Length: 220
Image (cartoon, rainbow, N blue to C red; front, side, top):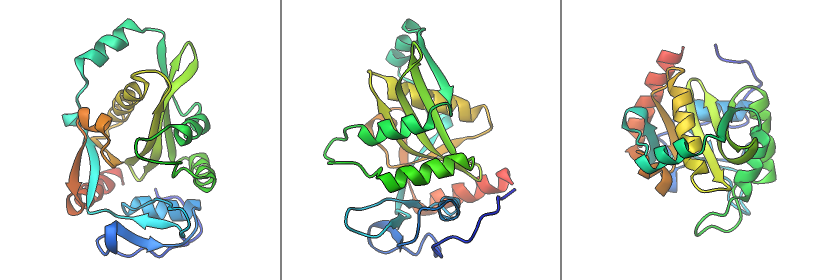
């Protein structure tokens, strides 16, 4: 059942009616109501320095369909050889968020996970819409992934690693965790080389919105 919040600070149009580069709306607040409304419509925020908040519904969306998920044999061997590596769910959401903000990104200066974004996603998590996977070695977090779970759809936001393979292990565990709950795919927004190597791909906006609608029907 849909939770009750105050009104969204943005009146989002049809997610097909975008401006250049997939921008669907400008401005608004990163409050729980607005984030809920955005993600339920397949829209996500992506701050740009010196600009008001930008909301996106891109022409091509990254997805990972679980039937197409691939675990490299080298990663399976690595996991077998390291029984000291364990996993937790939603035990350290804030730490995963902070570590993702600090993770160096190729060809990118700074981070889009601004202080305002951190506060917003912590609020979202506290309302029950955040999800994090923590990868631990001897109970110390060495990697992880976080995202949001709205109306039965998980949207991945970011992941990090402090030791080799930790982010891949986080993604693998996430897929197993969500699959056990009846999920069949996740929204990864953009397909990184790691996600691509494990089966992630781009689909057209219309295909994504159809997937979203079908999932919502099954969820409710």
